[in-house]
Image (tube, rainbow, N blue to C red; front, side, top):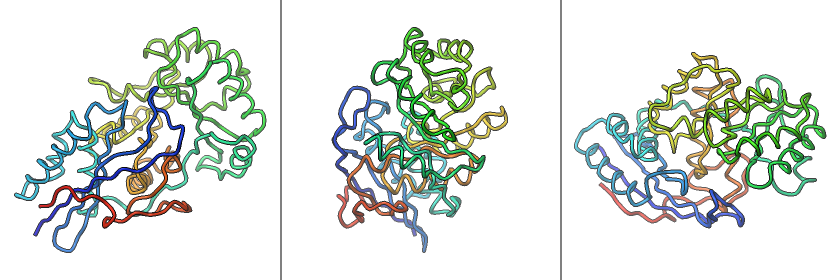
Amino acid sequence: MRRAAVYRYSLPMEAGVVLRNQRLKFRDGLLVRLWQDDKIGWGEIAPLPGFSQESLEQAQQATQHALAQWLQGASLSAVASAFGALPSVAFGLSMADAELRELLPEAASTHSAPLCHGDPDELYTRLGALPADVEGKKVAKVKVGLYEAVGDGLNVTMLLEALPDLYLRLDANRSWTPIKAAAFARYVAPELRSRLAFIEEPCHTREQSRAFARDTGIAIAWDESVRESGFEVHAEPGLAAIIIKPTLTGSLTRCRELIAQAHRAGLQAVVSSSIESSLGLNQLARMAAWLTPDTLPGLDTLDLMQAQLIRHWPESRLPLLNEEQLESIWQG
């Protein structure tokens, strides 16, 4: 016997969280719960404002339609894969299906590359105590491109000089012109650049980012490009990785395909958060341990919220909300 329920959540965010020039005060999304015989599967569907094309209302309508089909006997993995235009729906449904059918291993990669923010003294202490990844490196992530490129260059240089065993992943979200990207590079000494694991999409266009990598020797990674129509994974000079953000990418099947293509091309595939709840982060951590065991995921976003949902994230002290505290909006 099959049953399904959809819950809606709205988690208050910490002050100061800005995405693409808009302040995110609440993280809104849906949780799906499936029952079949004695098994249960959860999934999270949370379009990210400013990044997802679909709205939460569109996602809700599509989710209820898909679950109605599943209750009538359809394969949920097949239904999920059909929602290519609604990646958050495709991913959340496919993860609920994977849990229900016990396809998602329990082991999780909960050690992830921390985001560098907050009080400088606390940050340096936290980074100094970082455990190494499977390659023996301490890896952290820095958002760049929000302010002046020169300031970003100085900040990155200070971190690398202060912590000689630290490697950084940078995320620019296509924010730099070639001139600004070059200004950033001028303030990172050539001998430090090898400790920049990569910069995610430094420039407005892929061709400009390729030129940046060629001119500076700083590796790049594709992020937004991965989700564009017609994208194919190929090895390229200066390209180190692709970033997989499943909520923005699509079904588990689609994510697995991209990861396999990256590995065949000799590239890293990094599983990364789109500011999911603790439930979604736990599932991403399990996915990363399963599909990218040799690569540190990018999941350090829970502290941007003021509560957890359904499942605890290790060592988090945030209060945990259970399903009784959520708004039930659909059952079948």
